[in-house]
Image 1 (cartoon, rainbow, N blue to C red):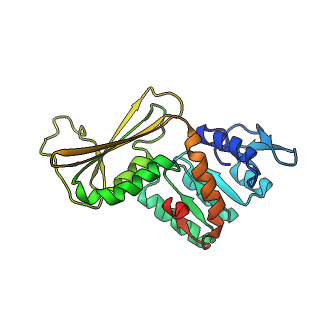
Image 2 (image 1 turned 120 degrees about the horizontal axis):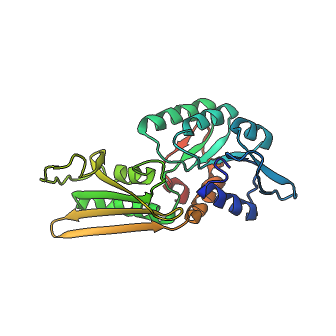
Image 3 (image 1 turned 60 degrees about the horizontal axis):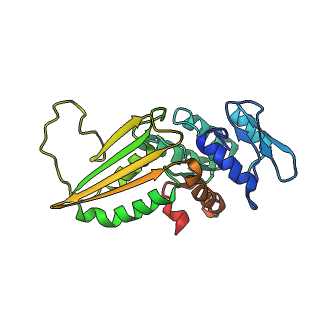
Length: 256
């Protein structure tokens, strides 16, 4: 588990330790030598601050990464060198980073899943947006996260914007009196990010769809990282069935 003591990583560690078909082999975290739990044979599992060493010692079959956009590309290079499959929930990937990750996965013949959000609510929302978008020319995405959130917008907000990028385009006639007040844009879709004193691992994404005389407003709020566990486990159990050298960027391939 990379990011084993973080908000999501710590929840996943607890869930893996309770799982009947998954076993925690090791962890990567800032706290060198911290005990993460005990394996099924009763032996303690320790975290390491050296990712390459942690992979070598653990002899894991697959790695789960919830770390930081600042280090994720270096992590991927280490995973490629170790030739290990990975389920990656770290956000902040640009198209350029995804292209580089795709090349690394193909060259090292590994299976990687880079998914911006493993939550049920967001993925059901994505399914709806794919069907509804053609009817609504006005679209907007808002993401709300704690002030300590590493990136803005969130990776999930970017994914939602990309899903919404194909369809009729409505345009605002308002001139920005303050530069940027209408938000940023991803593939032509407006995104606004708010960073406030929300507690813990709070995450909120709001999508607005508009046409003449009608607005649809959908809000998904997550109050802890537990909402990602089921999705991560689903990916872990299925990733080995994909061809070597594959990079998966769409959660629906796991849930179909």
